[in-house]
Each structure stands twice: as C-alpha cells, then as structure tokens.
Image 1 (cartoon, rainbow, N blue to C red):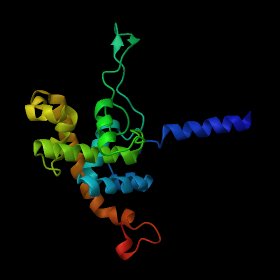
Image 2: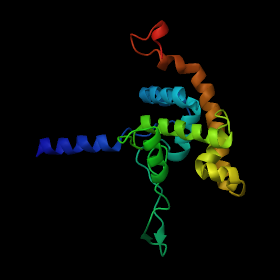
Image 3: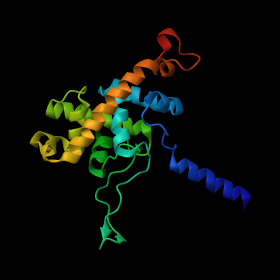
Image 4: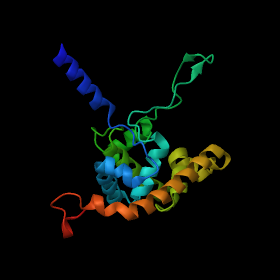
Length: 204
C-alpha cells in the first residue's frame, strides 16, 4: 500500500507541473527557478521572432504561469457551477480551435497546452501570424496582445477599442514586457552559457 501511495503521489506531482514562480515580477528569478523555460522561449524567438520578454509577459497575463488553469465556470442561477465561458486552457490560454490550427500548421499532434515549450512556441506562431495579417510589429506587445485576445480579424475591425478591460490588460502586458526585457538584459548570460560545454561559439 505504501508503494502504491508513493506512485500515486508521484504521478500527481507530474500531472500538476511546476508550481508558479512566487515572484512573477522578476524574469531573471523566474528563469533561475525554471531555466528550461528560457531555452523554450529562446527557441520560439529564433523560430518566430517574438522577443522572450514579450512571450513571458503574455503567459504571465494569461495564466500567471499556471500550467492547467481554465476560465472559471459560469454560475447557473448564481449558485450552480455551469459551463466555462471558453475552451481556453494552459499556460497560453489557447482555445481549442486555434490550438488545433497551431498543431496542424506548426506544432505536432503531441503538443500540449500544459507544457511551456509548446506554449511559448504557440505564442510565437500566433504573433507571427498576427504580423502577417495585421502588420503589427513583433516589437509592439500592446497591439500584439489586442490581436491575441480579439483574434486577427477582431483586431483589424478594432473590436478592442470599445473594451476597456482588454485595453488595460494590453497595457499591463506592454509594461511587463518592457520590465522583463530590462531585467533579462542584466542576466541573460547566466542562461545562455549555463552548461559546462557552453563556451564561446557553443553558447546558445
């Protein structure tokens, strides 16, 4: 029974994923706790062009770095738990339809919204599509977030202009991305060259 209990407990830890970083205002500290997240975000930046700081600001805004978060359920009659308002799930809060498009076009059948590697790659892919469809620069996190929240079609129609909550969230993303970028400039060398064999040209 003890062995079975340990197996169940271990499986439970694997399912939950890493705990959210306690200090989400400091990107250096986040990457010190989860250095692989830096690798994933760097790979996404190289593939799709969205800066690391912007990717992580999106994820902080969407999920506060919680791997399995979903929107809270609506309440029927104000009491009974009911349907969720959307299918958003995981670090990037990607919804089912667009996640399916991502897996078909750029990801793989095994891509998971609960894995940071796939979440950062999804954000990079989505923002690259935003750039193609709207002309928004990948260095403009505020307007990238408008398109992320409203969809590229909604962005082009300006649906975000009448949504103060979306505007507030987009400004927060932009401010956090700028802060994260400044922080990363002071510590990125730690993560580029942290392995014993990463010297000179072998640094990421």
